Each structure stands twice: as structure tokens, then as C-alpha cells.
Image (tube, rainbow, N blue to C red; front, side, top):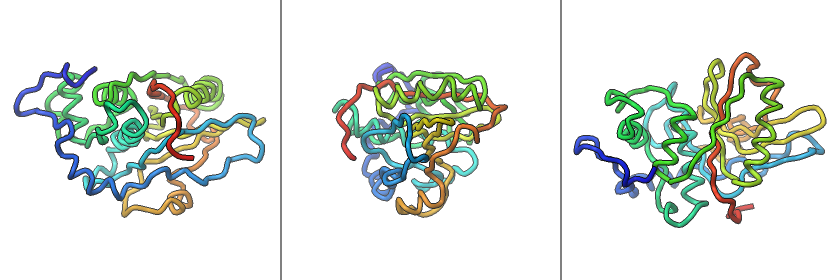
Length: 249
């Protein structure tokens, strides 16, 4: 959906970037490419695919808004948006990641959410991520449903993710029901006895951490698929971008 397709009232006008100076104040302290330097989870992977291009690590409270306990989906969307703003066509490169209020306003304006959703602490998931990214960046998303963790996650998600990172290179959003904490996926690694996902966890709250500290504390880490909740279903949101030459190595 293009921004021009939205019709909003005066009391629900969306700021499509006029507050970029305010955003620059905190985005300068949001860490970039926090997975860099992290070794593979196994010595000799059969196949490994990871994000290409720059992104920023958005987490609880990183812009001064206290969203602990409910904002993880918004933060994962912002991380994905930070990649899109740097790694797709020039028409959207100047569009910074939308704030939480902007995301809520867009969902209300698209009539996905009722008006009371504005200013609420309601969670959002992969479906909302798909329409928000389409709205702000004109990038369609593929949604993949995995019925359960464990073997099903290995059989369905792994090859999807390998193909995604090879073709689109963009971070992925993951959510579920019993495992309902939103998380970013930055890569996938397959070995002889199973696969691992490179998980970016938005639940950190505190002052900005250096890259090494983010890794040491486990806010970005390789997690074995067998460790995911086998009784939870999982949904993936995969932005369908055109592959580009990476901006960082």
C-alpha cells in the first residue's frame, strides 16, 4: 500500500517523516550490525545464510518510550525498517523507521485496528508487520505459518530462510502463540545434526550496549531449533525485497 492511498482525519494525521530530526537524536545511539564478529554455531556448517547490509538494533526503550512487556513486535518491525531504509531503492532510503505511535496510527488508518488502539499497549505480530512495512516502504511480505516447533520448524522454516537470505538478504520477524515473544532472525545455519537460527532479541532494556556486550549477554545469538517451544506454532514475516549489493561485510 502506498502512503497516498491512506485517508486520515485531522486528528489522526500521520507524520511521514517530518520529525526526522527528533529521531536522529536517538538513532545515532542505536547500535548497528550487532551480529558482526559472532562465530558460526558449529565448526563446519553444511549451509549458512545471513543478513546482508546494514541494520540497527531496536529494543525496549531505545527511543525513550517505555514499552517493556508489550513493545517487542514494534521493535522488531523497526529493526527491519532500519534495514529497508538503507538497503532498498532510493525512494525510501530517507524514510527512518516509524515510531511506535506512527505504527499504531498507520494500523488505525488502514482500518486494521480500532481507534482505541492509538496510545494502547496492545501487542502486534507478523501480520501487522507485513502491512506496516508495505505501508511505509512499499515492500510486500511473505507470511509463513509453521504448525509447531521442533521437527516441523526444521522441515518448513529452515529452507524458507536459506532461500530468503540468499534472495532478499533482509531481517525476518518471528512470532508464535505459546512462544509469543517477537524476535528477529538474522541468519540460519544448518549442520549434520540440525539447524540454528541467528536470533536478535528486542527485549533488552537499558542504555546502549557495545556490540561485544550485546553478544556476550545473548541479545543476539545462535539458537538451536531444538530449543524452541515444540508446543507453539510460529509465524514468519519475510520482506520480499530485491537483492542488492551489501553495504557492509
